[in-house]
Length: 290
Image (spheres, helix red, strand yellow):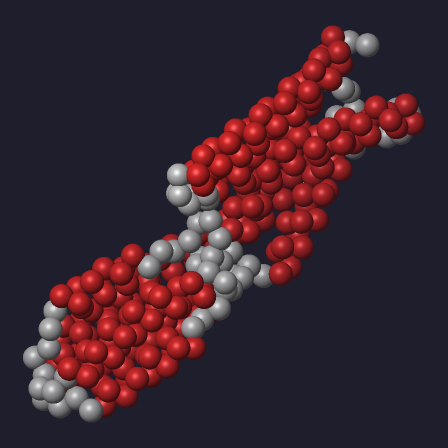
């Protein structure tokens, strides 16, 4: 047995020791936060938990490959190895699908973030423009009620991949109050345009609140991960330290990419989300204005 093979066991033990130590440290830190009355899961701590879980999962998959080789390696010695050029072609194709999913979903996420700002800005413009119109207090009150409902009711529901019916009714009330406005026709026309923009951006939120990735792409990504693991088991037959570390890195990176795709697939829920900061800013300004 080579020296590289002799080091495989200690490396596995080291990986598992690191994972257990990280889990113990995380549990201690979260317990201390809970005793202080602080939220147990902050964005940073939630991210650390995910990284720990992916780390442990990658170590388990790598360890499973190691056990399979040790258990059945003598039966596979005489069989044909996987051609490296075929595996390289497949991994390149799989990397393309991962990159395609990440670029597409990240673009959708940034668009959703920008559209939220546009929607909030359009509502603020409508509110500010209506101040010079006579008897427009009810219209502005309905605008404030709508923005408040979005903050208090709709955003928590969007974190559950759904829209608020109450917020939709509030927006309909705003449009109903708009019909009753009188005064400067140009200003009323500007309010119509701003509310039309807000309605378009609200519709965009409704269409992106759920999964934005085609289901067939998910099938390709999941099947591809299994194929990559299977290919690694056939490609690296030798139990060496370098091969074990490389397999762990590949599995860890792919799992991180898959989780990232899963998380940004819904821009308003998960760990990486579009926040209602623009709506909160607009609502505070509306409260200060008459």
